[in-house]
Length: 116
Image (cartoon, rainbow, N blue to C red; front, top):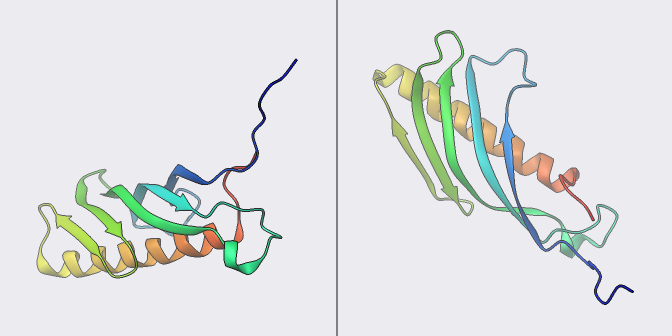
């Protein structure tokens, strides 16, 4: 006889990438920490949110070269380490990282990645 049961999933760490973007120039992946896990039809105050993005990796799709790593903690904290790129590509990579983060946050708020 069962003595315990799962009730709610409070948080999750999910690997996310941009492999479904057929127009991408960079392959981007990261571990996304999601908090306030709720059913998607639950009340608005329980909307899933990204608490942090860790171990972000950006590779040029054309040659597989790693051009940056990144981490994001909260809404306004972003750390990027550029690797072997000139200032023009650094700006481009920074823009694609910011776009990736925006897409991740949007998806997490509308599509539950895991459930019980």
